[in-house]
Image 1 (cartoon, rainbow, N blue to C red):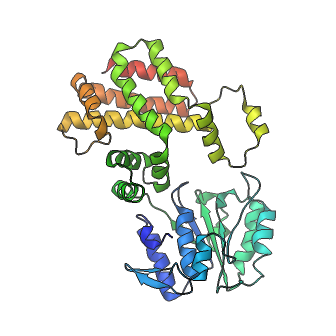
Image 2: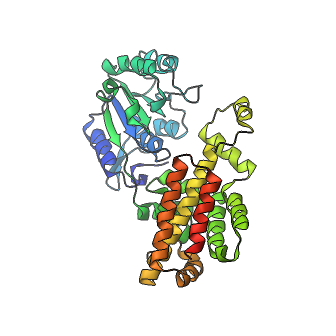
Image 3: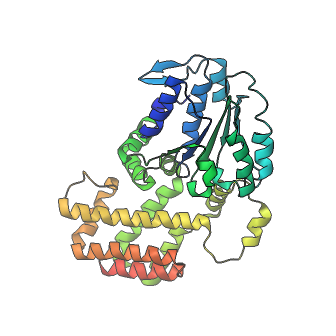
Length: 369
């Protein structure tokens, strides 16, 4: 069972929650804001479990749930009758009916076995205006036993009247070193891979864990770096073919990504997209990772050329490749490549043809290594 001690680099949020537990002054409503996969539900579940615990105890300087009482066991198995997670059938919308039936009309029923009745609303930004107005009525006059957690990746999606009635707790990016230690100690990820995943995650613990478990990401990283080292020996058409093979996931991998992004996506929706040449969300994620690999690799080349040390390399396991490129590159050439990467990314964001943009980029890279 996870506890406050397991929360990574969210000092302000943890301090606020600990103070609430120690004083007994728990707000009736919280908004927890942070990136997708940053750990909003993880933190909320720890707090909710501690609030409902029958025998709280102090461990390692934190007020923690005991993890032994009936309430803690129910919370850990997600079967606690007084910790309710609001669900919605429509993937993109939390409707007014969802809020009315699962929150507004339910709060009048007192807790079954606990002092509090806790409602957790994941993806709160999906509440439409009617749903928010329905929730507002509960927030204005909540029963004393009700606590509502709204989790969101977009605070601006809420009515100001909702925000003003909640305590807003914003998650901060975790430090790379903290994420690295977490991956190595809790999931036995090897040091160089933990370093790479932490760097790519940009402070998002959930994304780092996802990357560590993603075999396709590791293949993309290896194939991209391998391509760079062979550029001088390849013709343009060969480069184009290899780039396309790297950034186009296998069919089964695309399906996994699509399922994750839209859990309830219907088969008919997939069919309606067949034959379209627009880049899918899955492809966009792959392109982002592809550009990140290129950017971090040439950043490593620049660092190694300046220091000739491995201490600050992200791709320390690719030292032989880095040395090889460094021997042939000038500082001016490396900087030009990094600038070209930024230009190419901006073009893609402006919906310039992907294949043409990448072709121009790799011509630039080839000329400067």
